[in-house]
Image 1: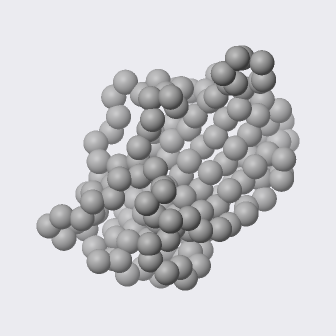
Image 2 (image 1 turned 90 degrees about the vertical axis):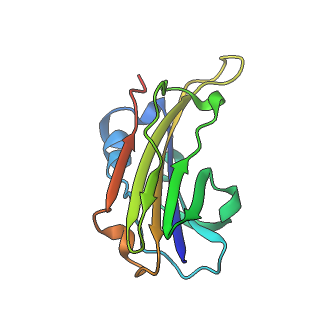
Length: 157
C-alpha cells in the first residue's frame, strides 16, 4: 500500500520568540502540496529563522525520517521517535501510536528546545510536523484537515 510522508521542520532562536518574527514563525504552514517522489522518499520542508521562515523543500530517504511506520492487517501504525537527548520539553507519557486505515492521514506535531553542550550559546528551538497518509492520495491532501491530529507540543519557556 502507498505511504506518503511529509516532514516539516521549523527552527528558530530566542530572537523569534516574540514580535514580528514570532508572528512570521507562527504563520508558517503545517501542510504543503506533495511533489511526485519515487518510493521510498519523503517530502521534506525546512523553514529557518535566518530565511524569514520561507519554505525550502527537498526529499529524504524514508528510512532516515524519525518516525516508525509499520503495516499490518491493512492498517499503518505511525509513531514518531523522540530520542532521550531531545527530551525538552519533558514527555513523561507519550500518546499511543496511531493506526491508519487506507485513505486516512495523520498530522503529528512535536517541539524541542536545545542549548549547546557547554551552555555557551543561546537556546534554539524547532517544531516537527509529520503529515503521513496511507493509501493513494492527491498531491494536496495535506492542505486539508487530517483524519487524526496528535499535538505533542509542550511548553518551551
